[in-house]
Length: 331
Image: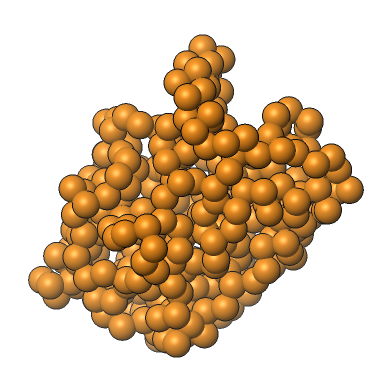
């Protein structure tokens, strides 16, 4: 039976990279784009327009799937470092996921792979290593984005309890090639390359290459166990190390890291300036909270289950810069 992948968020960084890998295999792909997005079809990929917040627009994605072995990869979502739980954030991340769940049930798809986030997981204490959970609650996580992902992830788990064959992955902080600046961390790198970055902050987080996450998503979809969650992380990396990776990649200038407590005092100013200039600020109260939070995640379960093995972040930073400068990079 021919394999068919239905992929939401096809215009995004992660879903676009997943499609790049799947295009090298013997399968058919349907990618869901927003009405404002455009991509050219290929020999095994057809792009359709729709919106996960509008159920009626999703039927063409699921139409005529009889006779296929169907896997849905739900990667559409809004990533936010803001403090406010906006209607758009909730509609896309929570209601959009529930709409996809309803479509999976209506069309009796074979499997759903849901792209959650490590932010959906309760952090525990600051010294613990964070591992997979089996239940999720918006009340146990911090930040608007995290709350939406926790609620959506629990909705998927509830659907599994009602019979849906679904697997969940939790990526950490994604960066890498094939993104032109929509990713917040890519924006950070671009600011360094242009000389507009005043410096970094103390603290850090778990950053992971988009290519490793994409392969992890595909393998989880193919071989993960029904109802299981898999963290797709790398390792905790201080911001000062990220700045050094950038400096080495371009033989650039060293940047200092300001104390987090100072950056937190300045965060309201950064947010105000972002509203005035209509540009996303590099630092917000939530992003600085993240840099100071528990960023130690274990991907041992994914490694044991399907051979997940993230690459060195120095290579990711180098390849990201190469893509930004030349538009070229290999998978």
